[in-house]
Length: 186
Ligand code: HEM
Image 1 (spheres, rainbow, N blue to C red):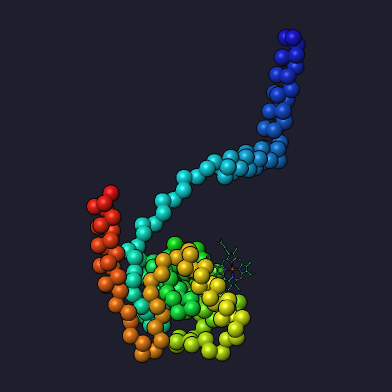
Image 2 (cartoon, helix red, strand yellow):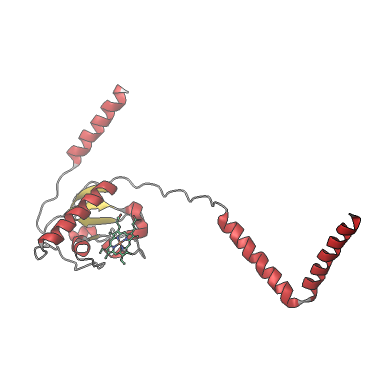
């Protein structure tokens, strides 16, 4: 029994000297230690970053020119995208539409044509009436619109040149008074 312990003691001492005496072994040990440390560090659940504060809800219509600054590069980082004549607040999907994102070209733009034609480009600077698109492409735009409606807040309409914006303040007052009513009832 005693012999066994001293044998294993000798064995470990031999390994230790083997490692210390050879610079190559020493380098390997340090390398393995770094790898193990990295694996352990990556497996540890990191504390998730707190979500950015939510921006106040926007409710208004936009011309193509007014929409353009909302590409996520402004101080508040808000990103708006128009699809099928509707403007959506996609700020929460910054990783898609924000600067450097795969669909950054759609930020602050009317994405309809790009979505219908599988082209991730920002198109022109003028209003696009999409009149040259075929039935299938228009259908695809409506499907994207439905998807955006489910996922994002609707901000308003994308205005045609010369079209007057809708006044949404009545809607806001109505919403506020119905919220007030709900609160009183509860
Ligand atoms: C190689 C081709 C493509 C691949 C592999 C790809 C893959 C993806 C993936 C993985 C997502 C994320 C889905 C999620 O996490 O919710 C996504 C989202 C999206 N893709 Fe693509 N995509 C491709 C091409 C395109 C093209 C050509 C367009 C349109 C021009 C497009 C438009 C979009 C849009 C708008 C979103 C975000 C939708 C949202 O806001 O939820 N993709 N894509």
